[in-house]
Image (cartoon, rainbow, N blue to C red):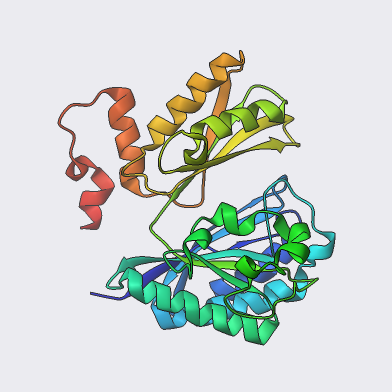
Length: 298
C-alpha cells in the first residue's frame, strides 16, 4: 500500500490566466505529485487546486508553489468576492492512504515553519493542526481578512504559529491545516440580491443554528448577475449534499427566490454524489458495487 496525501491549496488569483498557469505548472511538473484538478473563479478572484502525492514530494511541491505564488500575486491590490487573508490563502492536507491524521498535522507544521521562515509570511494552523481551540474554525482564523489582519495580528490571541508577527504587505498571511475530506458545494439563486444569499447562508450554516457540518456564506456572481450560497460540507457522511441543497431551496422559498443551479468546486468523493442519487431517485438497496467504473478499476 502506498502513502498518499491530498492537498487542496487555494490562492488569491482567478482572473489572470497566465499567473494561474505559472503557479499550477509548479505542481504539474513536480515528481511524485499528481495534479488532479484546478478551478478558477473570476468573481471570487481565486483558484482552487487539488493534488495528491507521497508526503515528502507533496510537501516540497507545495513549498515550491508558494514561492511562485509570492512572486506573482500582490495582495495589496487584490479584490474578490471570497474571504481571503493571503496570496496563498489556505493549504489543507488530507490523509488518503497509508497516512494518519497525526502525520498530516506534522506535515502542516513542517510546511508552515518553512513558509513562515523562508517567505516571511505569518502562518496560522487550523482544523486538526490548530494550536488552540479558537483557531480550529477557518472562518474564525480568517475573520477580518487581509485588510483587518494588520490590526488583528497584534492581538495576543492571534499571534501567528510560525513566521513574523507582522503582516507581509504583498503576501498577506496563510492558513494551513490537517483535515478530513470536504465537499465544496455552491447553490445559485435566481436573484441578484446578495443579502438574500447571506440570509440563507446564515440559516443553513452550523454557526447560525443550521446543519452541523456546513459552513456557508453569500456571494455575488458579477458575470451572471446572480447571488450564490457558497458552502463547504466538512463531513459529507454526516451532512449529505442533498440535505444541504434541500435546506437552501426551502429557505429560498421564504424570499420567493428560485434555485437556478448548483456546482461542485474541485473534486468530490463518489459516495457523496451516489447518496444524492439514491435520495432523489429513491433507489432501494443500492450498493457502490453497482457502479460500473468502480468495478472496472478494482
